[in-house]
Structure formats: structure tokens, C-alpha cells
Amino acid sequence: SFLDMWGYVNDREVLGKPITGFWEKREKVLETLKALAREKNWMGELVARRKNGSTFDVQLLANIVENEAGKAICIMASVVDITERKKIEQMKSDFVSLASHELRTPLTSIVGYVDLILDGDTGEINKEQREFLEIISRNTQRFEALINDVLDIEKIESGRIQLKQEKVNLSEIVETSAYTFKIMAETKGLKLEKEIKTPELEILGDPDRLSQVFSNLLSNAIKYTKEGEVKVLAQNKGRFASVIVEDTGLGMTRDELRSVFTRFFRSEDSYVRETTGTGLGLSIAQA
Image 1 (cartoon, rainbow, N blue to C red):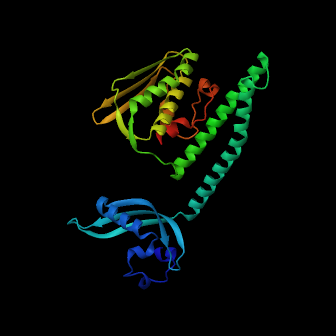
Image 2: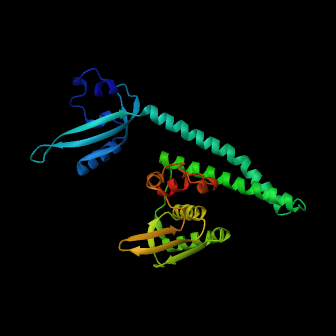
Image 3: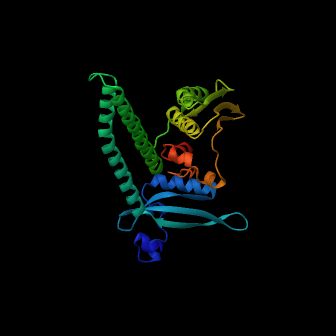
């Protein structure tokens, strides 16, 4: 009950007490009340303050109850103590950050020294040695991409990812992304077509994250297309900007479509399983 959760003994201790007295961060509570009055319902996380002054994290679902005349008569709320969940989430976040850092440090050294050898800075190498070193280089790059994806997922889940809001030309970002993946497509014998119907497609957004989204979409399209082509189309649709990536790839079943944005999901198709991938690219793109 409310009394047990907040540490009060009986109703007399709470009746008549200002609602802000039960919560930390008075301004946040007032903002929540304004949103509740405006929308008639509110769901989110707040920090509550017990009678003894200690605090705990809660998830709050609140609704305004109205009478037949449409007049508000009370607030009905459901509160869940999520303190332990928040602690576990923080522990997971700390572990991911630490593990990623500890993995990235030696990885950076490996990449650097392999590049030095491949560039001939340490002396001449034969054909077989070059082939082995290029395999090491490709796999370390793949591992580095996995670390970056895991870190991005963790930031998204913990709400720590900061998105910039600035004027960007979406068509330019799409064009640059398509150019970047042109060689990857040609190496597989695929045709990469881009169609920019609106050259000046200005929106508010984060250019780095938008570039990451298109890179993930194009990379996926090329990786899982055996033959044919990949198309990217950018255009203006009324008040909205539209970017479409199409391919002549394997396609998906209805069940796979339902899971396509799930973290680490990969199709059971043998061709997909033989192709390297983390199953995180589309999750990041959607987020």
C-alpha cells in the first residue's frame, strides 16, 4: 500500500499534505501534474521520498477520473517500486562500458600494428603473410563494429544517447552513404542505384546518427542480397521527408518481419547464417 511504501503509519499522517511532499525534485513533479492535467493520463519514472527522508525510484501510471459532467474528481494512480531494477540496469550499464573499454584498448593496438605491417613499414612481407594479415584486419574491424553496436544499444536503453537537433540536408547524407557503400556493392557484383528526387531535403536532426541509420540499412541490404541491385530513394512527401532502401534480396517471412527489429535477431536462412552480422544494426536504426 501507499502507507507501507512511503513509510507512514496511518492516513492522518498523509491527509492534507501537499503532493509535492512525497516526491524529490519539486519542479519535475509540477511538470508531471501539468502534463497529467493536459493529457488526462501520464506514465513515467519519478523519485519518491519516504517519511524518513530516504528516496526510491518508482514507475507511475496516473489517470484523472472525471464525473458524468466531465469534471475531474480524483487522480487514480498505480505505483511500482523499481529501485532494484534501476540498480541492476546501472550495474549492466557499468559492466558493458567497462568490458567494451577493456576489449577496445588491445583491439586498437592490434589494428594499428597490423596496418603498419601491411603498409610495409616493418619490412617486406610475402603474399601468404599479407593474406593472413588481411584476415586479421577484417576480423578485428568486425569485432570493433560489434563493440560499437553493443555500446550504442546500451546508451539507447539507458537513455544516455544525446541527439543533436540541427538543420541538415537529408539528401546529402543519403548521397554520401550510397557513395560509401558503392564499392561494397560492386565487390559482390551488385548494382547500387540512388535516386535523389529532392536535392534540398532539409530537416531537423542529428547528421551523425542519420548517417549511421542509412549505413546500417544499406549494409544490411547489400550483405543479404545475392544478386541484382540495391536502390535508395530520397524525396519530399508533403510535410515529411522519405528515404526508402529496396533490394532484390532474400526477403522475409511474416514471422521474421515481426522480429526484424529485435536485438540479435537473425534469420534462420542458411545464406544469412553464413554471412557475418551482429543482429544489432536494424535495432539501432529503429531506435
